[in-house]
Length: 136
Image (cartoon, rainbow, N blue to C red; front, side, top):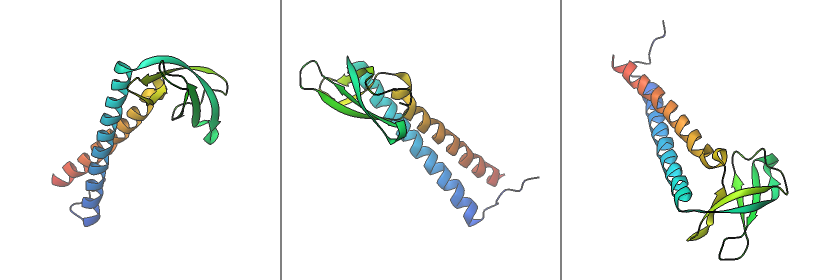
């Protein structure tokens, strides 16, 4: 049988840190998801060209031209492993702020939100479980 920490300082600190970290990650996931949702609803789609690959494939540089403006280059981090130099990719950008742009791909757009949400949920549930187990 596994015994709970029963009010030790380290146990209380651990459950508090897990609850706070989980809550922080959930808030970050919500903010990231909200920004992505706004970009998808207000954004304009254009074609972009991958002009560089960096960090062992974890980052790509994409050049695109907004409908009104000069060519821009964005650095896209995250779930971009399958993209190669010189490849054409769909880009979505905010016409009011062309610097707010991303490769228009589900994995690229939602990877951060899903990771933060899943990590936050797991940490929060473990912290909550420790706290509930302590109070029994």
